[in-house]
Image (cartoon, rainbow, N blue to C red):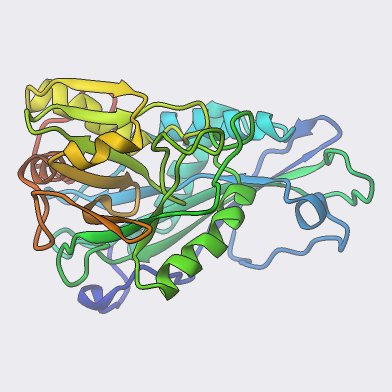
Length: 341
């Protein structure tokens, strides 16, 4: 497949329209066959459920060009399951999981010319999403839905190299104890926006959200999970029913144990413990791992021994191993890589 004429070295992490997107509609209790279309616009009733009551959920994935020139996607079955779980949480008809993977493959194939070539550090970002479409003026779930997938080529998240982040402990809550924090819903991200803007205005890169019930336990940021490394090189990840189950985190836990031989512990992490960890990072699809060098708790600094210059040594090994698997340098566990034929 011949690539389009783009300055691949200058790609940022922003939206660029590609050739095709996938669209399917749910009406009268069933999903239609779905199509690929060139039309990138959405026409909705002014009273659509998504506009009135934020009835929408989404996923984030990437397609990569491997060192041997193949296009691959990473663990799409897990995205299919998470989208189904999110949809059920807000009473959206789930898009069938087997069709989800096929729709992703179709969309990536149709936009293969936009997958950045190997060696540029870029990828094709894939955004599947679901939303309520029929008019809903009373507070109730919609009955008709649309499932869509668009793609956009993006450059490496760390365009100027990896720079450890400075976080602040947020005064805001990301999710309630029995709320929707463990689902990938637009409303969760909307709730985090003011906290994120506030953090940046005050000179921080991101927030650390604590649990809203006791404000003693580490949860996550507005869009990523935490990982910590102890001084004994144990990988520790926070556990909570209001944390989004990250596919990147689940993969890193396997890599830590099976590739790096590290002990892995998923448990409640109390904020008072954070000062004793050697390394800290944020993990997610976009950056894989963003290292954290410092956390500010209302003027009190927590500085990690890994410093503000680069990733800590264990975090770097985790990052290199996962990206190596995604790009074909390292043999992947069975079922992790979906080849686009």
